[in-house]
Length: 385
Image (tube, rainbow, N blue to C red; front, side, top):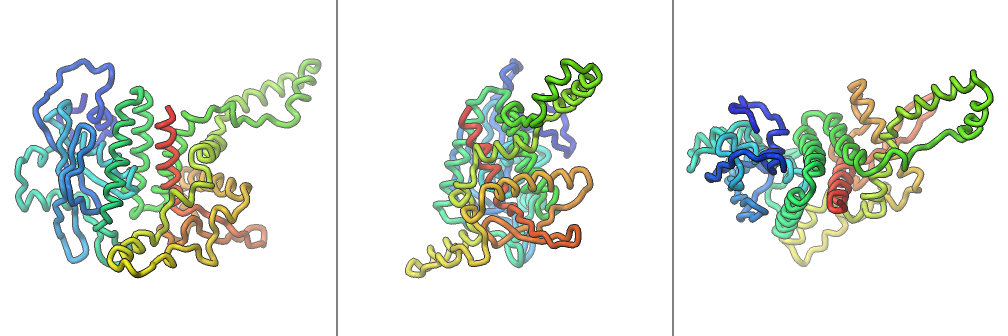
């Protein structure tokens, strides 16, 4: 049950409950029609029929010469309360962001959700909640090819169906991970380290459910000998007991994180699931000039490292380092060592550090690589249940 007045603050648990009622909920259901709004960063030209809801075509609002907003009305399912109907829109915006990899917003109150017709002032009020840069450096591509829009619609429908079919506890875990990816996308331009942290945390949250501690536990090579000695040496027994207590507290979170990725999004499929940074540009050229071949834009460059170029040990270290960089941000506020928040290299960035009077080359996963890993691995886990 949500608060009577949400007061311009989001408690995402309320949104999770609005999107799918708990199995234990036996209260009244207000079946009067309600609506919410989502604000995308791309144009939706047609109605998107989704399970239990419809997303209506975008209304584009030009705020300045380089800032616009794209507003879509959403028909809420019948179980969504007329009061606080915006909570469903917030949950849906998280799901759309997770699938598309593009930031999507909603409203923090239901004030405008009660309007049957939006006036110009209403559109402005909605627009300022999620202005999008459409021209200049860092601008997004607002017009996506129809084939990509159809792909998004199908994937969103599939994920929503999965969310409704899972046991409620698993639904809760999945929605919490989806929200972490959503928050990562919303915050990427504000703070790269925070967005990076949230992606790694999204993967880790599901890894704890999918990968058991015992499957990655690594006992010390001398543990068997120590156990024998502890049986005959009382003083050593106390020391060995302390060691066992400490190792028993180790959750092996980094190891479970890495194993989850290698199980549900192994490196041999990265080239298939991670689009090239120039792919959208190449697709637009191909659509406008069918006789022109833009494949050179998406081919591997001589200076680029691809997953198939790297040995398994290095790929594992790249993943382990991504977890380490997340921890450095949590505990010290230290940003990941990336130099490009959005890289034109397909998979990795390379940088150097100076340690012990020597230069050390560091291979870093692009944000887009981590995002694709999160999307694919979490979705595959959900479908495997």
